[in-house]
Length: 291
Image (cartoon, rainbow, N blue to C red):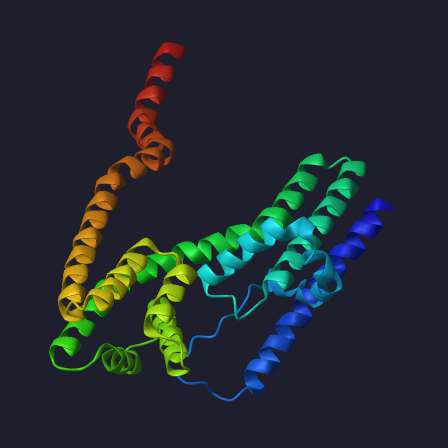
């Protein structure tokens, strides 16, 4: 009975994944060709599979029981850039559904005598959403750190050439491919064009992304505007500092490489080398002592 229920659930999940893939392919064929610089935000299939069930638990996700969890999730979605692709309540609902399904599989596997498999399924369904989100945030912050010095150099050249900050930023965003840094600056630029003050838009971008280097640059720009200091000089100094940090980080990673490679060398390479070198000697020694 347990195996029948488990097989039915697995079959239903497989069919759901297949239908989602088919619908995604159909929508990609039907949609018009988007601009080359626009990067679409697509959730993983494993999360989109449970997304249609999210409205049923949206009321529970909005309750006071999940206030802290919901605020933390909202911050992480903003940091990852997926806050416009999925709402905080829907993401919390998906996590609740996946957690409940994980415990269901755990008890089914427990009754079937497959405790280890049940623990693995429970761990996968509970841990996957936050792990994926943290991975997106980590890659997004790294991309911003890599692109920020070059962006500041372009802004410095444009401002020193006579353009104001907003015009320089708009021209740069039009000519460079859209990456996470470009997405955030483009969003801030649109907010400014809709009437929000430049300082407020930049501060909100800093709070939304929560990347230390970007926050430092934004604070410097805002402070320069408040004190009447030349923005071009501030951008140049910030660009030099970030480039120095990037070089230092590259040197640190290079120095860590020998230590990181030690474990796979000892576990996988040394035994093979010892077998190749000492194998024939050991074979001959066994023959000699055997005779």
